[in-house]
Length: 435
Ligand SMILES: Cc1cc2nc3c(=O)[nH]c(=O)nc-3n(C[C@H](O)[C@H](O)[C@H](O)COP(=O)(O)OP(=O)(O)OC[C@H]3O[C@@H](n4cnc5c(N)ncnc54)[C@H](O)[C@@H]3O)c2cc1C
Image (cartoon, rainbow, N blue to C red; front, side, top):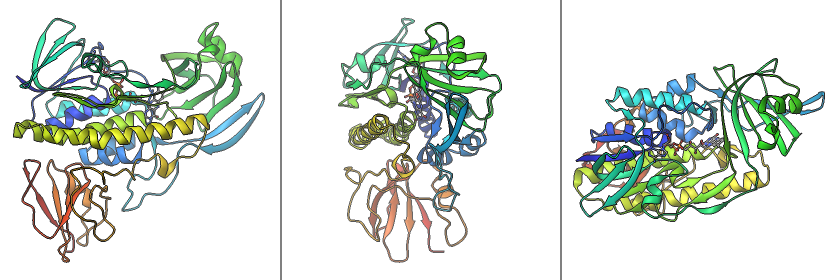
C-alpha cells in the first residue's frame, strides 16, 4: 500500500510531494495531463512562499528566474503614461530576505519544483487522472482513468479547480463568479514592445487589456476580456494595442472566481490548493496559498503516517481554511476596487496560526504561539533559516529560559522553560541563540 497518493502535480501537489519525500514517506504523484503545464499563469510569487522555497533549498533558483514587478504604462491612443507597480521594490534585510513579490512564470516555478522533486527520488505519473475514490477506516482506494486501482493510507487532492477528488468526496466549491466575463490569459511574442513596462490599454473591447513582460523569456503575458479575440486573437490585439503578435506560445480562458469548500478533510481524503479555493488573479494569492497549504500539510501528514494516527490532520483545516477565507475576502476587495494596494496586505508574512489548537501556552516578549518565525542573524553569525532547514522542529534556547519551540514549518508551537526533546515524531534540534 502507498502511504500517500497525491492527485495533481501542479505547484501544490509537487510542494507536498517534496515535503513528504524529505521525510522518507512513500508517495505516488499522479496527474491527468500528458506532461508539464506550459503557461505563465500564476506569475506572482509572494515573500512567504519565497521563504518556504528557501527552507526547502530552492530559493536561489527561484530568484535567478525572476524579476521585480515592473512599473505600469497606461496607453491612451498614441499617449503612454507611466504609473505605479503592483509590486514593491524594497531592499532586503536580515529579517526579510525576500521583501518583494517576484515575477516568475508559473511553468518555471513548476520546473524548479519538479527538478527538486526528481532530485529527492520522486516522479510524476502523467496521463494518470484520478477518476473515483472509496475509503474505509484503514485506507483509500483510488481508481485512475486507466482503470488501475491504487490503495493508499491517505489521498490528497491537489487536482485544481475542477478537482475530481473534491467531487468524489462530495464537497462543493461555494462562492461565485465575480463578473460574467470570460477572460483570456496567453503568452505572446510581440513585435516592438518595450519590455521595461507592464503595458495597460484601459479601453479595449470588453474592458482593459494588459501585456506584461515575462522575465528571462521573449514573451509577454496577455490578460484581456475574451471579446478582444472575437475575430481572432492576433487581429484583436493589433486593433486594441497597435502591436503585432509574432507567436502565440500558450493561451487559456478563465473567470474571476471567489470560491472555496467548507471542509478540507473527509476521513482520509484531504484537499489543498485550487482544489479547495479559487481566487481571482488580483493580489496574486492562488498559487501562493496552495504552496502554503502543502507546506502546512506535509509535516503533519508525515507525522500521521509514522504514528498511525491522523488526529493532527484536523489542525490542517483549522489553520488553513480561515487563511483561504481571509485571502478570498482580500482578493475580492482588490478586484472589485481595482486596487493597486499590495505589500504587507498580500505578502503573506503576517499570517499566523495563533488560534490553532497546536499553538500552546502564553506569549512572551511579544512572540505569540502560532507566529511565523522571521529570519535573523544569530550572535555567532549563523543565519536562523539555515538552522531551520531540516525536517523536524527546532527549539531556540535562550538564557532567560523562554525557549521558543518552532514547528517544522517555521511557526511557533510554544514558548516554554523546559527543553523539549521530541515533536511531531522527530527529535527536536536545539539551537543556542544567545551565543
Ligand atoms: C490569469 C491568472 C493569473 C494568476 N496569477 C496568479 C499569481 O500571480 N499568483 C498566484 O499565487 N496565483 C495566481 N493565479 C492562480 C494560480 O494559477 C493557481 O492558484 C495555481 O495554479 C493553483 O495551483 P494548484 O497546484 O493548486 O492547481 P493547478 O495548477 O490547477 O494544478 C492542478 C494539477 O492537477 C492536475 N489534474 C487535474 N485533474 C486531475 C485528476 N482528475 N487527476 C489527477 N490530476 C489532475 C492538472 O493537470 C494539474 O497539473 C492566477 C490564475 C490565473 C487564471
